[in-house]
Length: 186
Image 1 (cartoon, one colour):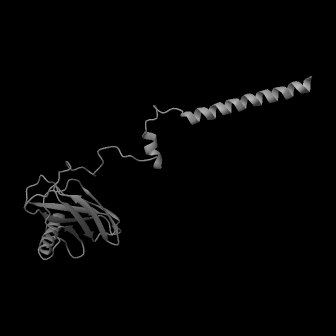
Image 2: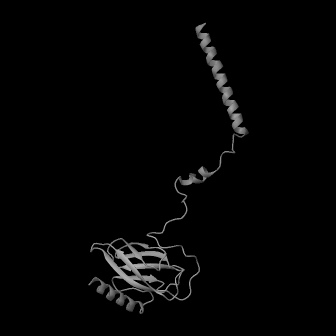
Image 3: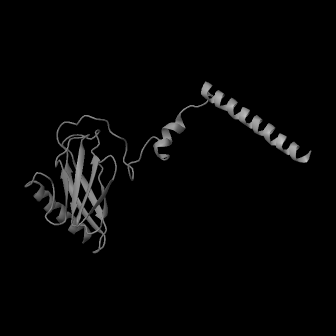
């Protein structure tokens, strides 16, 4: 019975998609903008009918699954369509989300436009997109200072003069304290 319901839902979504600029259903649906993206282009997803604050959208057309977030029954997210896909092909977008009424699954078709968009494909799909290089984080504003090479820096002439003055002052203090001590004992 679940597969029959899913097929009916997909048919309703496909019929609604032909009437509006973005593919979507009335109350529980998925809207993809642009509605017919070109391979390699960025798309925005809008999901209605999920009472939770998070969800996940997956499609073989996407470079990675999309984390959805939002409130008040509307979840949104963004992704990129694979540039290696053939134009004018149709793919399925499946959204899963949780909420007060339990887990929900919504499926909608996505048909690609003609010519591919410019830009590289960012790789094969994974559970979530992740950085491929280390992130310069932590240390606040000191990260740049910590990375600076300080091996070649030494004291400048001002440091040398200050050091000589401090050594002289310490020598004078030792002589003065020593003469006071010897004056008391003798």
